[in-house]
Image 1: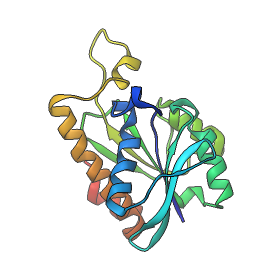
Image 2: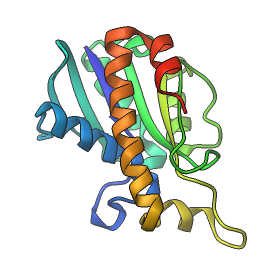
Image 3: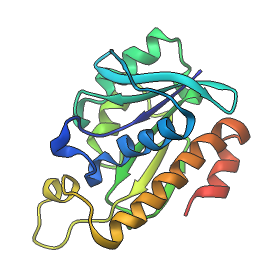
Image 4: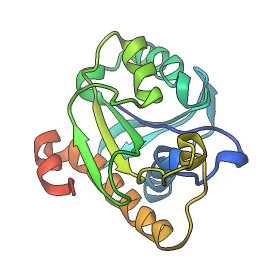
Length: 187
């Protein structure tokens, strides 16, 4: 069973902000595969289903970004998920231009507090992550204001396209393996 966790912040105040790129990708997968996120447990909102014959849990931690690990670790432990191979985390990344996508098998948090929380709770950084580029802040603006801002204009269309590509990456990881997904979808 795979756990696919999209990172973000709960509530309408944060809906469709740059920081919620992970949540929005989970919504793409849920719609595409008819998976209802109706379960509330482990400090998260999740749904069970199948994607291309593989059992999955689509998860949106409800702990706020900086405590994402407080949801992901207990859920993975309960379902006996091998987090080194069967946990896929989708997050935003300000160090990449809007519309870039990067998948990695492991690595540091790179300054992302949600990933830091997951690494801390799991006790290692060995999990698959898909990072969606949301662009860096403009000079003179606060990083928090930037990532918590709603996406508009051309960037909104670009991010909608890249969320679809991130969803394709998830299915490729499960059907073709991480290395093939990386070579096929990283951009």
